[in-house]
Structures are given as structure tokens and as C-alpha cells.
Image (cartoon, rainbow, N blue to C red):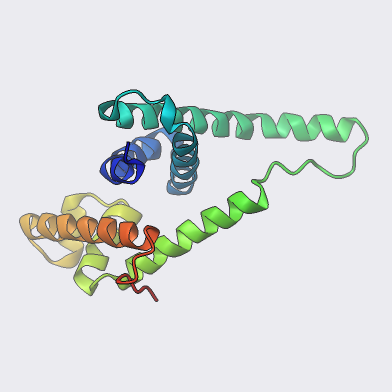
Length: 176
């Protein structure tokens, strides 16, 4: 099974699901990265490649649920630590390795965005990062809705191609 091809095909759809489930971009990005790592480690458990998206989404929902549960329990855990006489709270932060991986993915994504041509970057920034509607984006950029949709499609394709090339370590992908 070609994990890289399956990931390229389905990561955007699962990310959009995680945006809705997690409620913000940062958590959705973190959840998707962790879900992809778990999926890669357990790829042999997947019987049918056509079920990859549903399987990855299921893993990601579980990771998101665990994140939300940890966040909800954090005040209670901190209170119990304080009650037991501890003066320092337990650190629930990700490991240094996880933090480095997340930071590297964010740096890579920022570099890909910076490498886009100006019109593609503007559309992508407004639609994906600022999460404006198509109509709002077209209005801000002084475009027709059809022109904005065309640029949005090209911008997403460019981002996917450049991220994929950068993740694959392609020498043709030179980022700033």
C-alpha cells in the first residue's frame, strides 16, 4: 500500500473534518499530524486502500477527542496536584520530539505559502487561513466569484504539490 499516495489524496478532506471537530486550525493541524503518524505505524492493519480516508478520519477523531478530554481534565488535574502539596504542576505538553515535528511542519507550511505567486497566496490566505467565504474573498480581492474560485483551485493545487515535493525531499522544491 502506498501510504504517501493515500495521504496526498485524503489529507485535505480529513483536515477539513478536524477543523470542524477540533474547532481551530492549530488543533486540527496537530491532530492531523498525529493521526498520520499513527496511521503510518498501523498501516498493515488496513485491509482495503479504498477505506483509507474513513480509517484516517476515525483515527483523527479519536486523537481530537483525546485532546479535548485532556484539555477538559487539565484544571482538575492541576487542582489535585496542588492539593497533594506539589508546588509545580505536571507538564502535559507534547514531547520535545513531537514539538519539533509540529514546529517543522508549521515552518514547512509557512515556507510553502511564502513561495506561492502573489495572487495565489492572497486567495489561499483569505480562504484557508482566515477562513473567509468565497464571496468575501472575491470582494476583498476585487474579483468575480468565478475568477476567485479559479485562483482558489490553482492555489490549493500549488500548495499540495509544493508540500508533497517538500515532504518527499525533492531537490526541485526550493523553499525560502
